[in-house]
Image 1 (cartoon, each protein chain N blue to C red):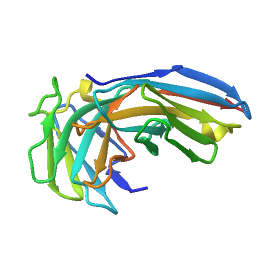
Image 2: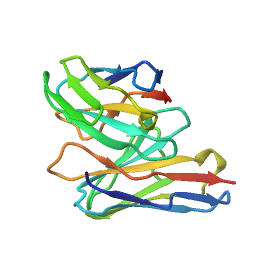
Image 3: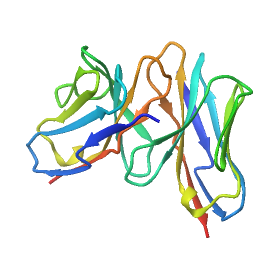
Length: 110
Length: 115
């Protein structure tokens, strides 16, 4: 059974204070690992797809990396508008569904 | 990214009535659509998966007769909550994916309140 564990559950940063969010996963065969951002009362917004170990993707202040066991979402010099819940999900090669982690609630204080 | 539109954004209904939520893919053909339920401070819980033209596959513990899912076209899926009760109050979110891409895109969500 696929498993996704995200840490920490919550993270408070000062504006400009860089940090990383972790997503550990167990899957029989990885078709893709996904990062989403969710604002309160909204649906998740797609950020990145990573397919294989060693892959990296960047978007503005965010950078996602992938190993065979975990993924990191690095946030460089965050701003208050980066405050949101960040969700990690995996899809296995033989399946259609996504398995989500519980998310990391990020708060960036000005 | 692709756009998925969900309507309504919020709805209040009386106990015992039915409510329909629509999910549309606006700029791509959604061969697969998913319906999720999300409780406060929790992650997404998959309710069912539907492929266009086929019956939905429901997750264990989800009542098929209570949560009716229709995926009649490549751009539209609907979730009908039948005989709604206060315990059905929740945030419902749809997502859609086409046959070419791995990622799924989400609608804005629908806040259902049953009074």
